[in-house]
Length: 192
Image 1 (cartoon, rainbow, N blue to C red):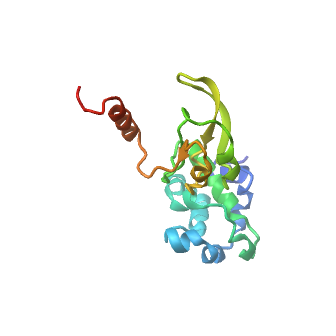
Image 2: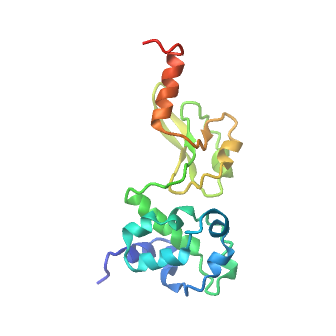
Image 3: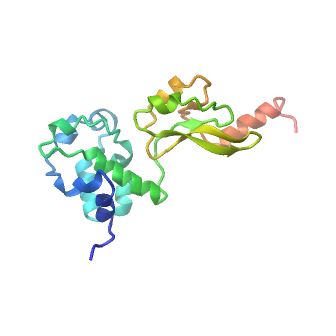
């Protein structure tokens, strides 16, 4: 009988089947630009150990789960030839399925101005953007860009390519800021 632990869930997702193949040699971290330049807590070996020890919450909150960009700089150096990014992506997928949110400020689409040209989806190196038909207020059902926050790495390529300026990586994006901007637009004098 197969148990339904985190390790088995990771192994069941394509890319996660190499979970136990890592020898913890450290070659991946020696090649990783994220670990060297962005976050010293980034450590794929530590994440794999947490997964194998069934440390679900710790795995979900670990920065490695969310910061791996799947650049695969580590792959050619790995003596086991493991695509460690596939294992990390499997953990990220399970985390998002369980309601966890990425700590990154991911791309946000203004669906009211999006023209669904698909440029953002074409340039996204993480396949995080798709064009889907959505029911929009005042516009009916229309195709628009949709960002999968679990895959978006907040690189900004989508915003640079968007001709209608409908997608961006706002650093201070929040629902409160959007409502405040709308209110100021509707009532610029501030009178109630």
